[in-house]
Length: 200
Image (cartoon, rainbow, N blue to C red; front, side):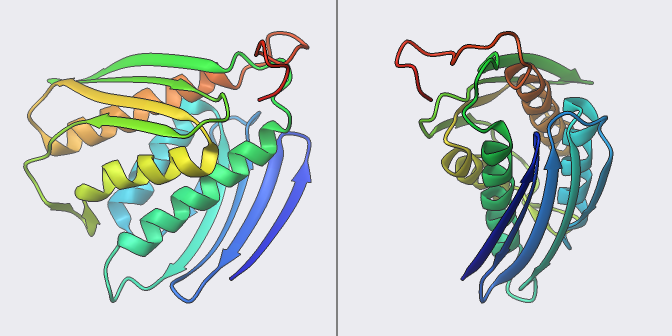
């Protein structure tokens, strides 16, 4: 496995190459929501594009994965790369709000996200989907994406569907609630490390 990292301000480029995937992602936490995403999984691209638009993060992502096997490795490894890029862009996390939360409706669906960028990995995920696949994206990978992201980003992520029937709406509401929670959590509100430990 090969991994390279380049950092400028709160923007980071991470490249990760394994026998299963070759991924390069550039994340700017202080962007305007511009994205160029090619994961090879159409619906997943749509979700990441929504995440960028609503978080205000800029993201350029290119993934060449073993989609002839299935979408698992690509989605999982993108979570790893994206989480690492966000963590590295945050640096020592000095002055950030650290916590973020949002409740987002999408038609009949209602999603809730609460998160902590406190340096510990934990993911709680409560959602069920009727459709097993949407445009090449296995719906079981929604949970796995956020679990993997939590591990890579060293964050607590709690996601729940409070109401809803339509699979597309529920997944999109989850990604949008995560976007707004992240938008709040990375905002710089001071100059101190937001922890009594003095380190995150």
